[in-house]
Length: 392
Image (cartoon, rainbow, N blue to C red; front, side, top):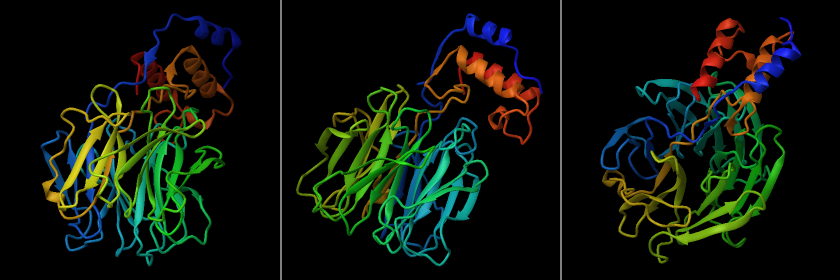
């Protein structure tokens, strides 16, 4: 193919285009809750706070729990559900279609003989417009993080964010911390060490930040989440302590990272820790998702604002989970693939650069907009259509 002529590029740059905001809320925002170790082997989808839709990703007799994440893995514009089993089973990760709950992917993230459980997260690491699957090994293995391509299931990243001989496991989250348009990987150390959080660049695999979310003497582990809570284009890091600490949620500014907000949810006499997530509601605002096990074994899942204020109507009906802790995950901000430069806005540069990519000899990998394995005029037509439509 021929390169795009400079005169045509200039024409594209000065063409009158309407800029599109990328903060549109998903049409079918959902929250997913998964039972922790000791509870039933169930997860539940919530499209409304009082209407759980339970399902069992693993054997009904399994009591190791279900870790959950939410992300648009197949790139159809609807968030899908990712699950990983807790301790006592092989690290069998599953992905369920967000529209019909059909199984999309099924694979072992680590050796099938490893039974320490697997933590899961979702984020677009490779910039193809679909969420990739991020896993963290549970206790009993080194803090091994892997990334699997959301579209193909192929392993694309493997690293240890903490000392390889640390055996407490690693919890994972994803969010665009440095504002480059690609998801970065947030890791939280499991029990047995300090409450260390590590942030790894999603494109270069270099360490961006490493810090303690709580006093270094606390050894109960730290749970992590990420989301652009303040709307500045960069994801904040949200943390919750594991067992042995009161339910203190911390929010860190990713640039320093400095502690931005800190608040307690419920009684400070409850030393069962707190699980955290983020969720984009119908108003387009990212809220903090809280999973709490109260002293009377009642599960409390609700939404909080960036400053810790309770969000009206944000309490979920979770009686089916009572008796064990829960993992929580919410719908992330949708990715707009027409934002070719990953700068958070649609502008003439995106259109010009995609056309340059398409007409290059040979065309660049990202020219295959339809991800069907070949670059043809349909890709160009669909990109231009998506660009002028605004998203996705």
